[in-house]
Length: 139
Image (cartoon, rainbow, N blue to C red):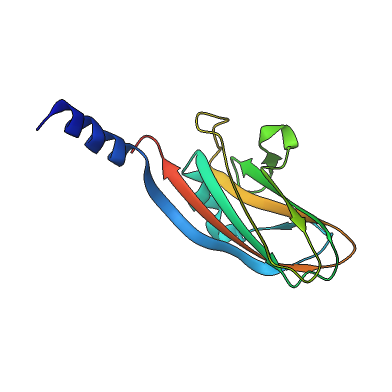
């Protein structure tokens, strides 16, 4: 096998998808919401999570912010990235919005448990579906 083929095989194995799921499907208001604790340990296994959000049936326009929060004990949560949102999506009443974002490779390492927090910055409500894909650079 050529060295180039070997490098290609190593690279394919190095960034394999390890987790992919619909982690949130519910109505969101201006009150903070988080993903179910069902996914906390699974998301905590990886340091790189990509998100795909689908927002529809919004009753008012505004923005949706999604934050990555982590914890060592599953009870006391701290936002990654200094509290900055990983994803901010513009929400338009009556329209469907999709947006993606991902954690920077080589960024802040995650603690044992990870959840996704979200807040709708409007007086209305919207249906939010949030998909998460995790990749493990370590293979």
